[in-house]
Length: 303
Image: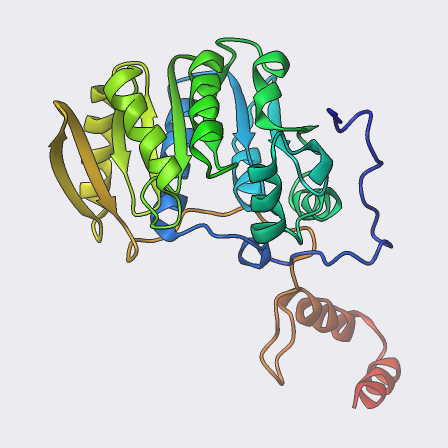
């Protein structure tokens, strides 16, 4: 079954009882400082180079990375998110269904939508189905940036990488999550198999994500190395892996990029005993213009 945002349930409303994150950090999920910086750098550089194309995410969890990616969507572009969400019947096989029940039993599409709409006016195009449907849902060569973070099982990741190659344009970037975690050997195998046999060329890696392209990685690598070196507080190292140049990046101590702002962000708190600048200015003006008797009455009322 494939369900899209236009034909599925209506988006959540403010009265449905779902929690609304007040900050990006409150969106459930894992997104470490180095990858925040790298996502921002790649997506911002594509914008600066006037590189247009759609965005795709395979595997969304509660929407943390989708919220970030949506902030870089340019006019005329489409953002597609493909995930099973809370539909175990859509799992393509028993192994995938077990993985869903074990790791993502609390995941619901409604929660994803509520989180995303806390930061953006419109939902992305949602395909609620196995990622195997992506080739039929996203046009070949239409994307500039693809984030793969769905199943950790080798057969599925292998297919997701193949789908990413088809939908990316020649200079597009693919990001593979959990390429080296001890509980995701299938992702590691599929990632390096794509490098050794499938023409995928690494640009850089963080502790948690692999960034690559089927185009020429060198312009990306040189520009990234130069900018992060200039920023400072970044650990950078060049390596050669299977004849490919690879940049290792660690930026845990570097300044985070600007993050999307929630419409539910708490109002700035005031220091006790101090008044907001605009309110204070308005009161001073009233004191200057109102008759003294009325001014004294207002002051007594405030006290």
